[in-house]
Image (tube, rainbow, N blue to C red; front, side, top):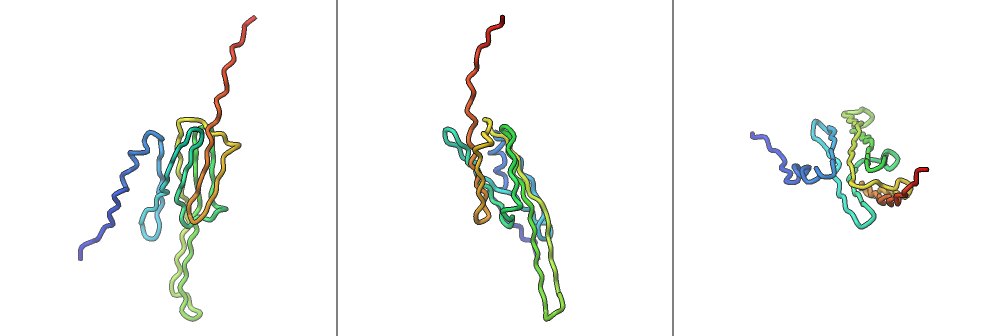
Length: 141
């Protein structure tokens, strides 16, 4: 019997994010299948909005770090599955792993106004652009 492989037409779209310097990291789930954090990044005049798929990651296990224009999203996945037959455990499957993704935005982000919400396996980040401070000419005496 021939091996059947799943075709994902969006698998090679990482080239589209090269301008944002987005680098996805993967982890193995259930016998070698790789899972990737998929993201949508949109921009209005003064705000970036990021929607990142993080299925199976609890709200308490999601960490977001903003350093200037560098944003890092990470999370920890904990999966347990146990099949019992009567009182005897027939099969037990456990998985613990981490998922992380970092990207650089063209403008610095105001960390104090950043908002992160998680619902239904999707993390939504609102990243306001830091207002540029006006330069001041200083007279040398």
